[in-house]
Image 1 (cartoon, rainbow, N blue to C red):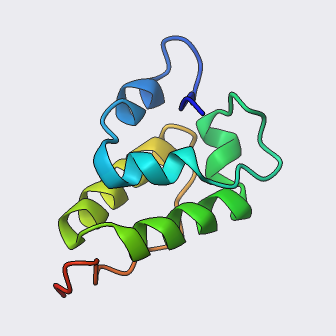
Image 2: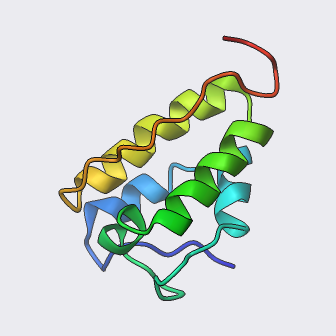
Image 3: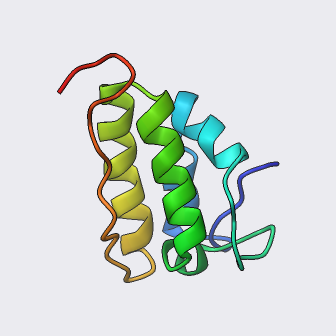
Length: 98
């Protein structure tokens, strides 16, 4: 599934384009919950099924550096929709770093 978030000209689009590697793979298998197949940041950031499925995937399959980078991007994406992402990612990635 292609990742599409936001609307034309929306700052979230540029941020989503920065997601790569392991976190990007997590987006491809995420549970979008009640959000449409072409969701926007307001929907995704407020959708518990999406937030939890991404967090679980990222925490269990990505490195610590990828987790930390993704957390920053996720916070910025949600900020474009005036949403504060409450779910924080554990940073003990698959590389075992803390």
